Length: 485
Ligand SMILES: Cc1ncc(COP(=O)(O)O)c(C=O)c1O
Image (cartoon, rainbow, N blue to C red; front, side, top):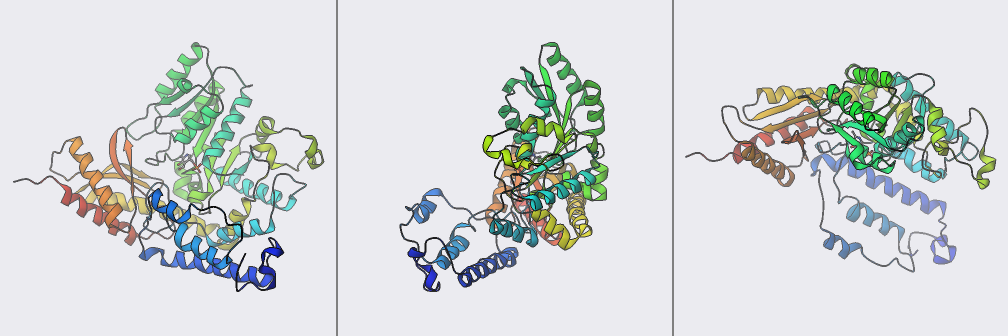
């Protein structure tokens, strides 16, 4: 390390240590750069990207034998590396599933790294383990799950889905020829999780959906019956609590009734929609979720936390521990006994970070009323998009707005454009928003129909951000229509 501002402890002879003064100075600068970025975001484009050759030119270098100025390194990261990305927290980022972390959440991740906690076992980290129990119990009460339920915080929704399948397979006594069921709208993360737990690709059943993209119950019942007759062992039926395409919620009550009657594990993938439960509208939409055997949700989506944090809730937490707990001689001292869980017994990770702190610090700082308002705001904005589009002569809703997601397309009234032409027009609009607008939107396919999609769950997004983007979509759409002579 070679830094003129570092003082006497800054040379290579001092190894990897830094003096407190320098640590504080660097931390102040890093915090300043992050805050400046957040403040300047609204005036900038939501997307920045670069081709690999260009990036390699700047970054593909051998690690230096001697260090250089720590301030320079920080400035390079802040100006030349981190900004070359989609700003998912930009108030006009409506693509995929955007997310804006709270500042206490960001600071919590910094503090967790600084306090250097390994939250693998109660012995090694009892305070943070207790905090994870507290946060998981908040989730349990919001969801309305029984007291036997429990779980853990994961890296995200994919990990939560995977852990749920491991528990489901365990609950079914680890049968040989397994199958799982999910709708044709389910996230690819569920398919991947099923493959990882050893379900053969042809036994991952994608059940058709109705006109509102909800699981067709008749098709589910028929497929399970056929598979059982063919000797397969269904280990899980998966419901969506907010598909990532359109926000659709599967018929949770009917699926819970069916799974109870058939003794099949019901998993709900609530990675997108789960935290809507803290708001009244969400509670209504997700009725029945509390009956699931497992629920995966993502706090780095609609609970405004920095990546990575998801959560898994299992109706009987002992099933999760039966599936994951292992013994190792070197860890024999870490067993504290009843009531003192080692979170490494609930999932893949042994060494793990303290994910609960960011949630806890954010909720302590702002209070649940603020979270409720922020989550409701996302749903309200999506309903306003729907109202706007219903009035629009150029745009057409493709399915009702649900859980903060609106899917629509350019399709002017009183024209009779074929599907191919409409797709071409809408692709053009998407590209023009990408290159010519500050906003970022993405697209999806709804039963094969190309749809523009806006997800409006960022707490900083205003109606003005949404309206101006819709105006530009309409303008680009009108300009892309085939010319008539
Ligand atoms: C419905 C759904 N399930 C699962 C996932 C995967 O979650 P993660 O990206 O946190 O692993 C997502 C991510 O967008 C999702 O929307």
